[in-house]
Image (cartoon, rainbow, N blue to C red; front, side):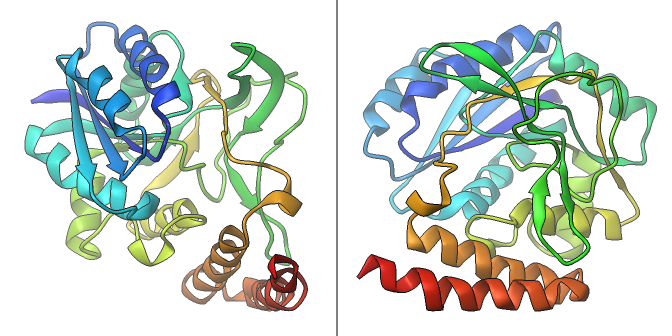
Length: 281
């Protein structure tokens, strides 16, 4: 048995990979780990291969198509479970763990078997400057009364991270899941991430499914990690496909988990098609 199997899905992210691997090594302490890199047909696959060849406990799964975040993770899960890990961690390639993160996380979930998904405060990191920005990226995900999903305190200054949080969902950039929960999800649904989502809101869907199995999700204040969040945060510059997927997946989440969200999700989809689609012509 291995302690941790970590899974990261990449698409043209070779510049982050070595930093990710180095952070995992520093965070593991005396624990054993194996990293699975699930690549979605990147153009920089040769650079990723070179990095993986130099590492003993890293496996590259190179797909010939861009399967998206959900299927990319599911493909790697099917390989990771063969190592019989205690925990599986889904981690973005542009996310760096802090010292002893893995060992501290293991103790928290071992002490409380009711935790289904565990994460910690994600703090923004400027990869170009190689230093933190001093701002919060995510303390988990919550939803407004009318149905808008948002990362808790994103963009706020780091002031007090001493509080633990039980959010509605946890950001998919970093999620620790005990192997027993993985097994329960596979028995119940036949998958970990719903591949219909491709990307966006898949973490919300997963959180609700885990909670429906009787587990809780938890953000522990001591599990700090740094997230570069490489995607463009300016909505005006987001590709239309990204906006469309986000809106469609809002509909999926509303219909399956929170019907009260449906009016907002429907209006969001209408807005995307009526007011943003013409802008790409």
